[in-house]
Image 1: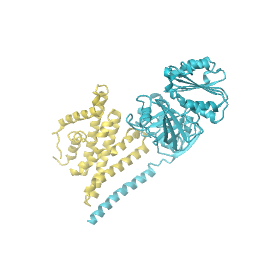
Image 2 (image 1 turned 45 degrees about the vertical axis):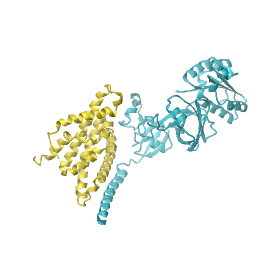
Image 3 (image 1 turned 180 degrees about the horizontal axis):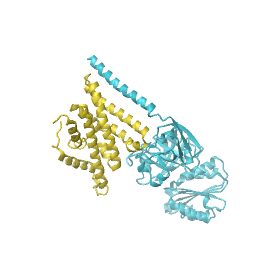
Image 4 (image 1 turned 90 degrees about the vertical axis):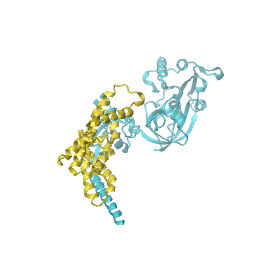
Length: 197
Length: 367
């Protein structure tokens, strides 16, 4: 593949064929608990997309310019975690201070994201696959949008599901996991379209 | 080996240091809202540090807003009317706020953050309400299904209450509840004993709090409660008193009578206590003791369905009939009622027929 197109390929792959949520099953807890309504799902989806795109860039820089030169790559887990936590906290404070509307829509979801494993997962995949800065950014953005897409679809289904008769034993998390599984099967239809390593 | 160790330590510390420094600076600049003023009921003014949740800010100034979940936004109890400076609702508040409450600007105080000067309205009685930690001093079976719980207050060590008021008792997470819940119980203790709170709790099958108290609570346990609440309390007059209670409705009436005794009152008082059979009667000796201490007091227990083995020589019949037969002339009296809604409604009718105006009939209905 043309190397200038590679970041774009990664971007689309992250949304469809390698969806972080539906193929890697990362970021499940907020996916399950916040997907009850469309409106909150949109808020959380946007917040995840923003944080993923930003933290991949930050973590890429920290990894490439600090951890690699000093041969400290084994510290990446703990370093990535604190970078993400500090960044999320900072963004929350800024949003809370500057925009009431934005805080009501996004801000309250940010603390939820600090401990979202999809965010850490994206940063780790990025260094394992040795992406460049540009590719990493597109990978983060794509993964965020993919996650957004998945939770949006789930919320849409669950809004309809509220009127369905679910067997008592499957109510709540049970039926949601079953739906997530079926959605993952559906996303398998995309595989083969783009292959990235 | 030592150098790699030192390098990793140094880099790790440097990264943490930079991030921590960044957070400290952010907290002092972006997160610093300065001091803000909270005006309560157009009257009281508090100055608090901005940026914190309203619930916490008020708590820090000694104004206690009841909340069961402790500010996690999962109980919906800590509602406060914010009349000025409220701004937009947060998604975390909306599940608890009805359309009517939205029009009245009711906010969930644990989620709402104070960032600018605001005006709020809260019920006056909340100014005296505090959150208490207490130790279970003793547990006693009063009847087959009513337990007396005596609590020794730890922090704060004293309560300022009026006879007849109630507290909210916190039930921690256990088998029947996933999160702490509060239930209201009248205090049976005398107000002059500020270090103790006594409750009389009847077992309700599958009741979250009553089951906890009857089956799980042990002497020596630490419990949480808050209070005092309620406008059912002894009025400071010279009028004759008619008290009527059934079951654990005994508690606030006992407090009222003990209060009269501790003040050496000479007021005339009748206490009608309704029960089904003899095994539902309790505190008979205490009431006889009170009859000796209070010159104008008579205790009139009545059984509605006495058994043969009860060998009951006292009053027989429904409590309403007994009140109608033996009640004082109502024109001058005031009445204190505590019991089930059915009993209260029936008794109010009887009392008005005795000549008592409704505004002098005070009652505490079990919800």
